[in-house]
Amino acid sequence: MTNTVTLNHLGRSVFGGLGNISSGSLRTSLDSTWNNFLSQQQQRTFIQMRTVLKVVDNSGAKKVMCIQALKGKKGARLGDTIVASVKEAHPNGKVKKGEVVYGVVVRAAMQRGRCDGSEVKFDDNAVVLLDKQGQPRGTRVFGPVPHELRKKKHLKILTLAEHIA
Amino acid sequence: MLAALRSRALLHHSSSSSFSNLQQWKLGFLGLERTRSSSSIESNKATELLNLQEIEQILSDVKADDIRVIPVRQHCDFMVIATGRSTWHVKNIAQALIYKAKQKQKGAQRISLPSVEGQEGGKWVVIDSGTVIVHALDEKARAYYNLESLWTTETSPKEPSSQVK
Image (tube, rainbow over the protein chains, first blue to last red):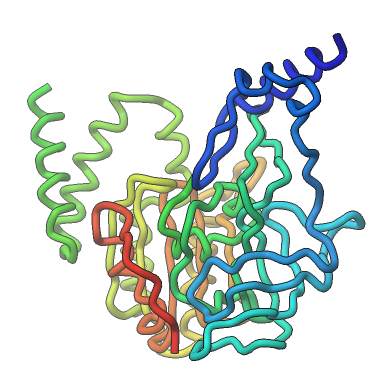
């Protein structure tokens, strides 16, 4: 009985407004009715120290590891700035491996509530690199980015984005 | 009905020619106003902060170079890009726009200012006034980010990622 209660809650939050905006799958509530113990979805949490994120601009880096979430005691969420260290980079790019960079989280696996009551979550954790003054390091941002960046004063990333969720 | 069709045709024509001069834009804007007033009341309230015509006037007063107005259907209505000759000039453009918004709302009980990003850096300042977003860049930043090529293609560009050297 308790399983079905949590299911409904999850189902409502998934289809509340925008639901899962991901590059691939859309989880339906029908799949989860099959096996009860498999149906409970993984609870995603904040982006904190040691979290590896994907870089979705063309600044040259591929993967960064978060060193510090600048705001929030528990960690960073969608739209927050982090300090990160570049772990993997393209061979000829502006950003080199081992560099300490600032970044803005543009996609997070943890859901974020919107003011109309819906929640938005993505399939991966992605970041766009900035410099200290807040200027983007790359010139294009790939993949979908949410509107939340507008309220968080990251309009520059929104203008460079190819798709706004 | 005919006026709405004519204005829509005008807007379509002017949006197909990417770099249009101010006069054509004024026609396009007037057409858009007519269609907008017939659709909903909320959108009229959203143009409260700064109008496109006022912005054009301020930019020509401040002597900003190379003003481009681009219609955007996604998260805002118009995107204005202007160049400043130096970082101080770019900051001045932003200040002038805020000053105009303040003047416009003189005597009102609550003043809502357009949000500004990048003011301290001076390289790229974004002023967000609801339906219109103004980008003030300096020469180097304009060449680097190349915003026109992003926003003047109608659909979202799906080019393969090119590395930034």
